[in-house]
Image (cartoon, rainbow, N blue to C red):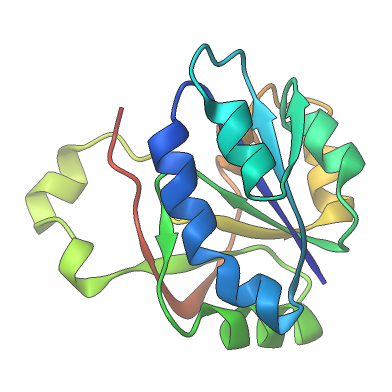
Length: 167
């Protein structure tokens, strides 16, 4: 079972798009809970989370990890959307792997080569599937989900993600 964590601040529209792409995982019983870790939003982020049935917590990613019920965590940016087929790939990965994994960018969403080289990479742009045990250990020194995801050796999943637009 998987817990989804989304760290957000003032991004109610992006959060709604991300939550919509998780519905299939909830129906299949793969997504156990969704935790929205808010960093002080002044918009209606809390209402979007509550209407979708998410757990809403104020504070950093460490608070969300502590409340997660799943053995594996899926960290996403608000606005990212998982493409069809992600469920089977994540289930297969969590059943046999111990290392973290990231999704592949959707083909239509890939930037040209030079744009990728010269743009600042966001560590969570392609999501992150990580064991709760490893995330708990990393969260002790990371102040955000982005910091937690940075520099991790990961496996590439055969499932696609539409990356959230940069802020």
